[in-house]
Every structure is written in structure tokens, then in C-alpha cells.
Image (cartoon, rainbow, N blue to C red; front, side, top):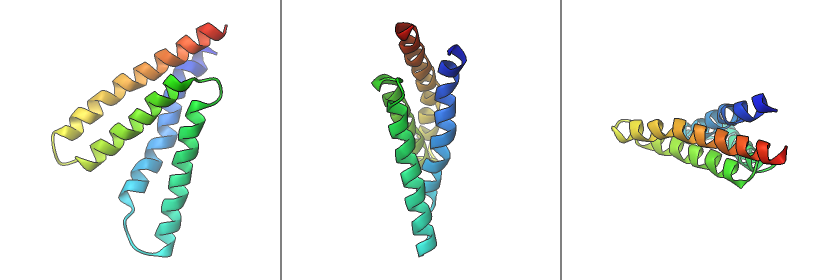
Length: 109
């Protein structure tokens, strides 16, 4: 149970961030690209909803949602120094998500 609580933030990040960056990067016209963007958006929404369920608590889901927001902010401000500021805050949110998940695990036991 402890290993699961420690690895869940990283697992959710690996499942959410590629879909988010793909959603932001795909801007070509065409039905195939539109279908791919819709699929990536649905995948991202499903992963964000899943981060709130399964006994993880609202704090864990909020931390994962904020991480997606920081990745999107870093993507939009890429050539500037602000991108590095956003990326520097992401590990702090990963630690916060792990702490919240561990607290939830300890309280449930």
C-alpha cells in the first residue's frame, strides 16, 4: 500500500502530461487531427476525474489538476524564463500529492 501511495503521483503525471502537451501542440487543420485532439481531451478528462476517485481524496486530485495547469503554463511561456519557474514548481506539487496520498493511506489504516 505504501508503494502505491508513493508511485501514484508519478503514474498520473506520466498518463496526463503527454495527453496535455499533445492537446496543446496539435493545431493542424483536418478531421484526423480534430479526432486526435478530441481523443486526447477525453483521455485527459478521464485521468483528471480518476485522480479524484478511488479513495485518493480531493487534495490529491487538486494537486494533479494544478500540475496539469503548470505544465500548460510552461508550454505557453516556453521561450521565456517563466517556463522554468513553472517547471520548478511541479516537483513541489508532486511531493504535495505524495504527502496527501500518504496521509489518506495512514488515516484509512
